[in-house]
Length: 129
Image (cartoon, rainbow, N blue to C red; front, side, top):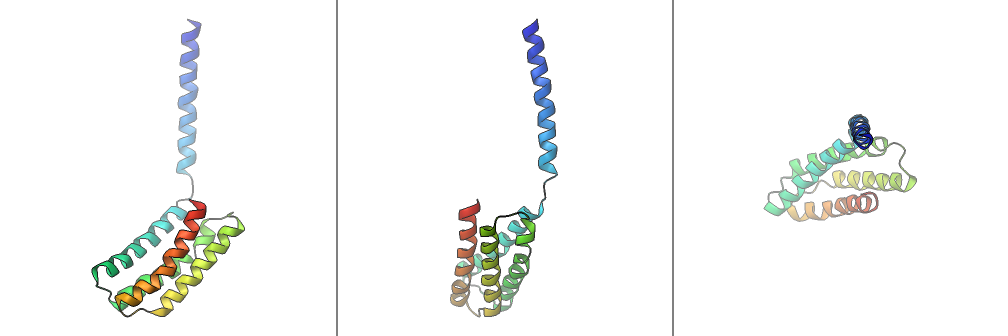
């Protein structure tokens, strides 16, 4: 009888703890994940343009500008991040600003332009994923 009571009590405590944990995870800031999804969407579009050989200059420039603008929010989105992360976020911002300014006119130029962007992304993700 006592063992059954302890099992029921343990299950009740487990259920309550799971409910608290679920509410904590729901209340976390969605901005970092959303920002990374937006960046991934744009870089995937640029990679698909290169792969398909359809690199319209205006569309490429727009995606690079959108990524550049979104990169401004990386450091604030990850508030409390360590200085190394902030340095890498600043590097990404600079690389994207240069890429947006480059305004690649064809697929060869776009491919060359997005390589440093991809490298900046990978540098950060390699350290912080």
